[in-house]
Image (tube, rainbow, N blue to C red; front, side):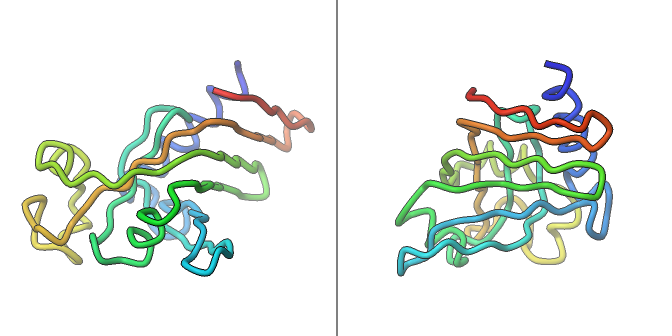
Length: 144
């Protein structure tokens, strides 16, 4: 349980562009329209430990298109000190309450605001995890 709590702290430190630069990003892997895995960086909006993580994007983005076709995905956060790999499913949320709740200021550079009809929330829900911290020297795997 200590490993999961530690991983939740890493994720929380990267939410809403808090860390800036690389520290604000996670790698999001999805299945593309041809059935191949693709990976890209995405800023974490908010999270509940390792249970769920949200990302913000456009309803017409490649990420949203891929999720509509296949909702399976993976999120990875890594550094020389840790590797947190989460596997689960994604959904696209467009309701105004959720969009307002997940909005963070840096998104104003891309979207006009939480009411922007082109803006959506991607919610990733973890089903299983593989977490490694260098200071412990061992990986922890499990299902949620």
